[in-house]
Length: 250
Image (tube, rainbow, N blue to C red):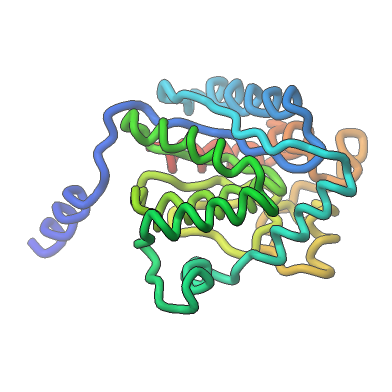
């Protein structure tokens, strides 16, 4: 009886979605717009080929590249402001009193302006897209590669704890993640052979590797490419990423 009551309470509390989920790709450094779209299309094709697509809509939250050194500077700025856990994100806003799950419109606007004029210039455009998908009654899954994970974590934080409270409506599937934390309901895949993330860990904290893909220099000597390594269906990461997207979009 108790189990039934718990299940009923969970179903009542869970958001009800009026439309199929939106799956949005968020790219990393040194990607042109065309590169980002191509990665999104590979993700979409693989989801359909594995019969994991449930009439999802697909989007592209583009993170513009300004050259290798500029992109790397931006990553280090974003890592500098990254917090160790979700609650700390909000404690930064008002000296320690803001609670996770709530933020006034005024604080939201100030923080959005601060981030968009410093380390995340695309943030307003990304959030506008996400709010539109949520307004259509869609669940939202961000598939973030490399630096895109730093965008995705911040964007989830703002939508979940902002005035629109999107708790249970948005999550991320991180790929080759340089982030140091994961939000509840999200997942990530980082290869132990990913030399870009391994190199970053020497000087910055990042989530540990959780899969071994192996060394494939003919595809990508750094083992970091979204398409050639993580979405390559000959390697084990692809199935895990695709299944995580499907599960989180359900």
